[in-house]
Image (cartoon, rainbow, N blue to C red; front, side, top):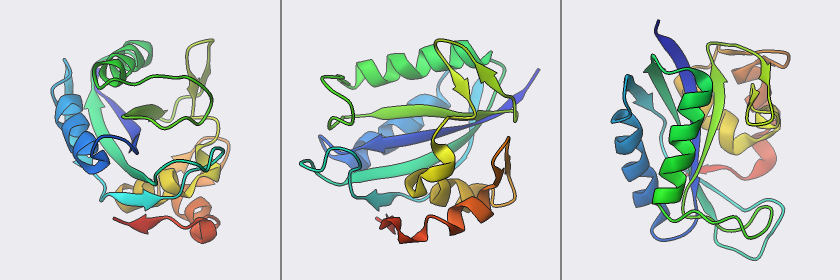
Length: 159
């Protein structure tokens, strides 16, 4: 069975735009997965820990036959292969991949919460997501375009 999923990508270390482009290629190469399309790249000021470079962010839309938890495991493996470390919350990172949505399902396990629990508050997720699917319904939150409109003052700019 084919599933539609959306993945947020972010990087602020080691040529962030190139990290995002490489990760998109790697996501397209995941087993039983195809990249439908990717948003433009967006530049975003850091949140939570300000003493770090700006981020480059994007969102990927994929079709996959993988179950959500298997997809998450593969995304975490891609982060690690890029050198992702987690020394403290909101630390600078080479690559951050978040599974945002998976067929509009809701899920809460120790490993995965769907939809992503803070995506409806984050312009750096909603603006690229809206570029791909403006009328997409985020379960329990509303339509992507309506939520993105509330985040326009967050300083998210096309890169």
